[in-house]
Length: 200
Image 1 (cartoon, helix red, strand yellow):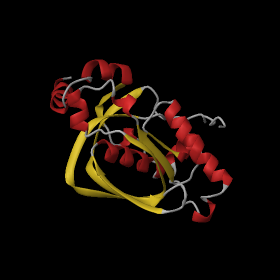
Image 2 (cartoon, rainbow, N blue to C red):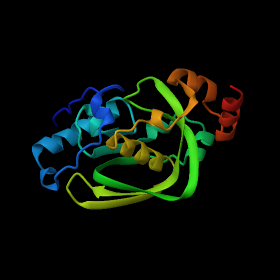
Image 3 (cartoon, one colour):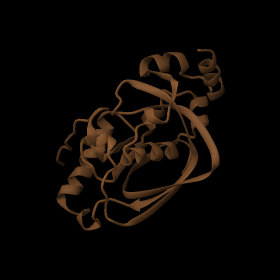
């Protein structure tokens, strides 16, 4: 088994993060170039570790993202955090040329971080449920209608393809280093966090 390469993750301020990524010609999906890119993205996401990664984050302006939420990443969360976020473990998925549709009017807020805004976190309101369609790593059409944390990851990664970062959507007064956000808000319910931000 060959070792997967790990790519450097570009940081906020890098132009590719602020440009709309280009559609990928489906005929290129099975090429060694794109297959290698997808493998590198998954390996880089896991090594970070993170739950999602878009091609622009490794300096490639194409409409591809990968996501995965492994059980070990949930291990340090409280039962309240897991339940409120609707967080469930799922295996690696690849979306190419995705389209995203928000489902319903419900919005939920939680802290988000980003591998391209390394070391920081902010409170972001997002749709509770979404439907994403796109091609998988084999070029087959797929659709995923999901709620909870997977829906948040999908919206976060889709934003990357549009040239947006979570800091564009966050409640600005919540912005903090990831370490301080965890120390102050970790283990608390969404209502408790909102109250702390109001008086903070």
